Image 1 (tube, rainbow, N blue to C red):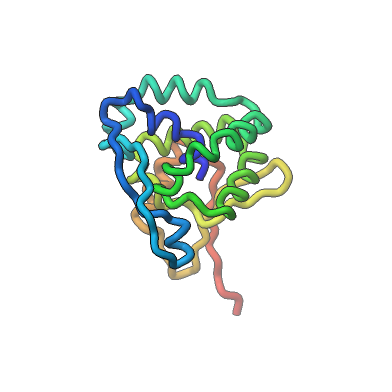
Image 2 (cartoon, helix red, strand yellow):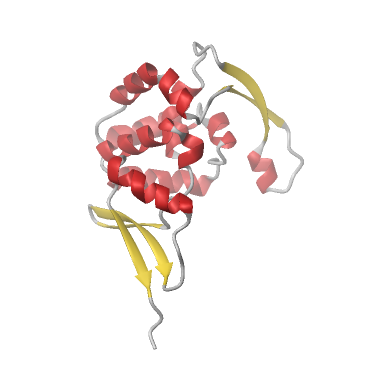
Length: 184
């Protein structure tokens, strides 16, 4: 959700020579088990790949540097960009009302610098980095961390191992691996 809202302007940039119009089925209709109509959106042919990030590096850096620096400003920007990002968010399956409400709560307590690091991390290779994220975001007041919860016999998936390794270098999110053992 956050990625779709904050990056729609760069990803759907009319000046990008690789942007083309693609059709997707309406996710809201799908959720309602209703017949779906085609929604037409602009999307670069290399979206989500490392090549996209390299090719659009200047535009991405400029965009991230222009994004608000306070949580209140980020929330205002989120509200302003929610409607224009609808097509991209539907493409990314980030269209549900509850996801919007969760995203707003995240904006309130994740520091803007961390949020920008998260966005940069995702744009570098979206398809490779969209999975493997920890199970939970735990917070109390201004303190927060991401938590991956595993039972005694459970192992990390390859995507989870990759995320943990990546997080040490970028985006540096507070993280804990929590092992749960059955009490006898």
